[in-house]
Length: 239
Image 1 (spheres, helix red, strand yellow):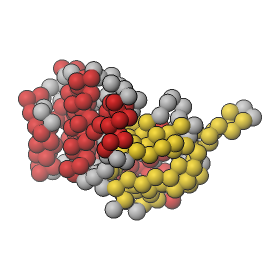
Image 2 (cartoon, rainbow, N blue to C red):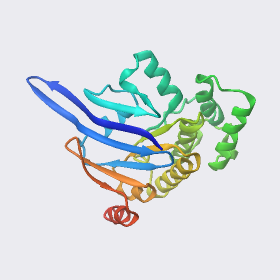
Image 3 (cartoon, one colour):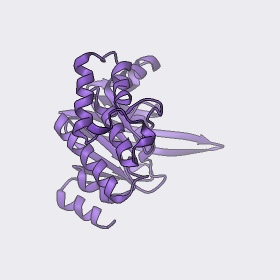
Image 4 (tube, helix red, strand yellow):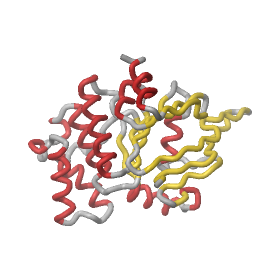
């Protein structure tokens, strides 16, 4: 079952007297339990594409459908509510609330969705334990390493059981060991929870943990790698 489908999605900008196509008629689909990497050089359109999948940018053309719901048919308020309930985010910076504890940061996502009952709060605790943070539940973000902060951000992004989780360069500020830990955990949770996952990354080594790689260039999809051998060969070029 496809959780995410886009059809001929484009994003254009007017710069003085010229039209810039940041994304140019991109069509793709992602299934439940599938983890996909968007890669490409700076200016290839991958970050703009991710922002449109998140409902943060409105496409200039085409359609984006998440779990049967077309984003372009929603009002701004409907899109905001849908994004809060159905989409999870992890960014390059963990964006944790500095004065809240690790557990409170994750519970915050439950609260904004009106799902902060005793059972849900226990699920937040259990997820953090699974992520190796059981002894840091009451710590503040400043007391954590970068990798630990990103694991908290991952927990926060999936605790409300969204349809899709999006990650924008989640390992950019981490060393190799911590980057591998973060992406491998992310992949494990996406597969186990049958979510649709999309990660923008400049680090091709992280592609070893995804199921498919979509390479973008000049706003278009240049190539899609879906076999394990192809993906591992691409990752090896960055070793």
